[in-house]
Amino acid sequence: MKLKTHKATAKRIKITKRKKYLHRKTHQDHFNARDPGKKTRAKRRLKRVHITSRQQIKRLLPYG
Image (tube, rainbow, N blue to C red; front, side):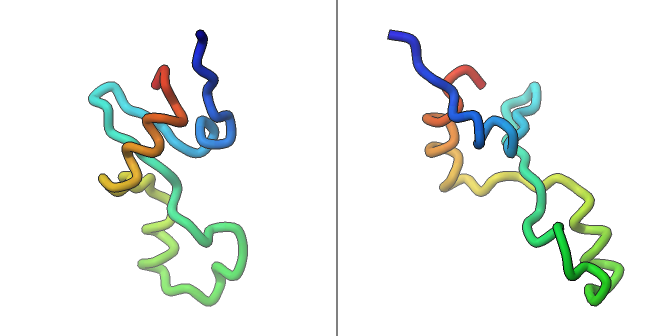
């Protein structure tokens, strides 16, 4: 039987060629004016998914 990809997860997680799982930093949508510049700049970069979450994501993205 064919496995289904969890589309919501597929939109949020990027898998690199070397199998690194990346995601966007949280709290980016609003209230950014009061954050310091260092925090704002850090939000622009993609972050690696924590190792404990990786097993769950592998199940949700079987063809990743």
